[in-house]
Each structure stands twice: as structure tokens, then as C-alpha cells.
Image (cartoon, rainbow, N blue to C red):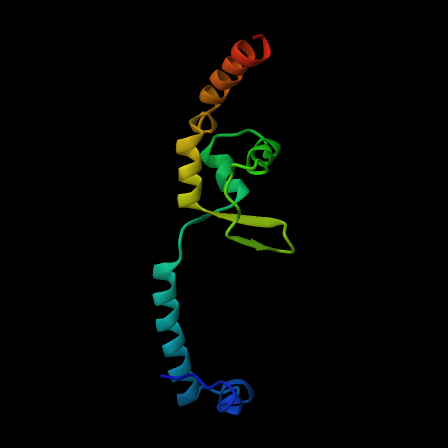
Length: 120
């Protein structure tokens, strides 16, 4: 069904009573919403990454996502304040940089850097 909002403006938005046009539009829109929900990919916010990686503060997540190797956000909203990352992209990053996953692995990585890079 083609939803012509302009053609049915009165029935949809001016008539405050329940009517057949409203019922059919709502039914069609609910069906479309369910179909759209099926294809939405899993997106992760900075808060989700913080929980996923068991990080104590927000700055730690910020330090990781601002690096060149971290994937670009697929969606940014609220005037750029809230980037969202595709979970699959984050999984690829985690495979390439496994030290990010846990506090223990981050500590081991920092120790390795100290021994092999800084003190070398």
C-alpha cells in the first residue's frame, strides 16, 4: 500500500477521531516497522564499548576510538556527540588488537611495550 500522507492529510492529522484511514496507515506502518527492525545491524555506543571491554572510565574508550585503526562510526547523532559503531567492525578491530578486550590483556600489553619498546 502506498502511503500518501498529503492526500490523506485531513483524515490523518486534522481529524482527531479514529477513522478507517488512520487504522490502515497505522497497520501498514507497524508492519513496515517490524520489517525494518529485522534488518537493523547491532550498533555500539561508547558506553557499550566501555562495558564490553570492562573499562573503568570514559577517557579510556575515547583514547582507543580516536586512533586511526579504529573503525569510523556508521552513525553520529546529537550534533556529533554520540557516535555509533557497527558491532562487526568492532569485532574486526578486537581480532586485530586483542589487548583491548580485558583489563588483564591491557596490562600485559602495557608491560610488553615498556620492556620491548621503551626500555629497548
